[in-house]
Length: 453
Ligand SMILES: *Cc1c(COP(=O)(O)O)cnc(C)c1O
Image 1 (cartoon, rainbow, N blue to C red):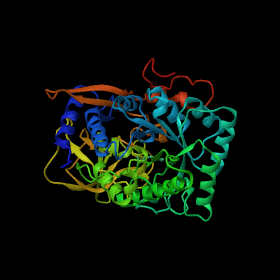
Image 2 (image 1 turned 90 degrees about the horizontal axis):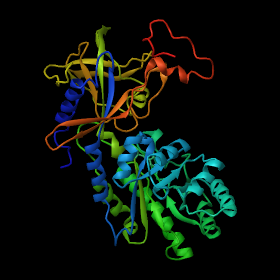
Image 3 (image 1 turned 180 degrees about the vertical axis):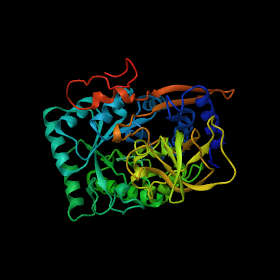
Image 4 (image 1 turned 135 degrees about the vertical axis):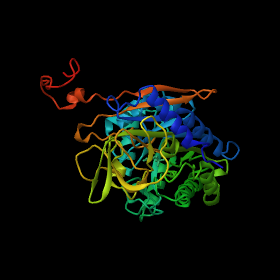
């Protein structure tokens, strides 16, 4: 029911247009990425539709986890669509503010907020979720000097266990995030914090990301709701104004179907945490991957093909610099690969098992191993779907590989594709400004005239 209609046909259409308009070019731009803004709008609508309003939930703010894709035009689009923004560092906070999110719709989560960062967030009125008892004390000291309009919550580690990817599981017994709720004495200590700090009015939890089953996430939220009930019982109705349930809805990387859906998750929340819908609490969500992943793809030219030990290998321009997690953890982060001809026409027919390699200088720089695909040739294109979150938007600067251009895509009623530049490609000849402090080097021999410094 929720398969994006003709997603593959749409990718092919966009790819052909990108080649025709020169956004993909074997010499000038052998790698580029695309964000489908129409798709983003539809996803945000689905998110808004999935959560009920009053009387069940007196207020819901959906924030986007900026780390999933912190490109300015993407953040601005989400702001226009009524979302807030969850940030985890000063850099993300700066980008959220630059994108126009009002402070009241920004949530600052980080386990390592400095005093200066907290001071800044509190003076702006940004929501702050404290990660630890020490951070609560630090906030108390700052508020004693200067009051703030910020909403302040405390992050709970509900210790409900991990999912299939350990690095994405934030609610294990020994996770670095939040106050571990089940550790001896912590409930009492948390209740003492609520007693001591009248400004502490929210509860936050984020059970994990990709690899966490929905019922695990919902059980984490249930623990947070249960704790909020304990606070209410101790200090009275409305002592806890709201519950920030985090993000983490997993994404289907196997095909174009959008599953699970936000509505599926709300169903699980109703089953495991019915009290959340009792009309008592405002709710904040912090989804990242599920908002953007399926609304972006990358395309790269095949530069060379070869065979090694009987294994065909296609050497492309997409590797660890744009698919870092997949390259270093291929089993946890498999990606689909699609094969297209030089003009963006999908290749069909017989397949051969081949490796799809990237350009970086280490042997593990592979997007896919032993993958059955139509035979690839130099000049062909490979497309990597589902990469709108945590891939090209989070580049890895290994080998001084430049960041590729990112193009926004919108389709008008007549089906015409319109591109807008989301991020310009880095020019490798100008990367010397990231060399470290020093005198600029003379232009290297062979550099295009006037481009090197
Ligand atoms: C990463 C993160 C998110 C977003 O996770 P997704 O899996 O991208 O939805 C939300 N909240 C917090 C605290 C996070 O660390």
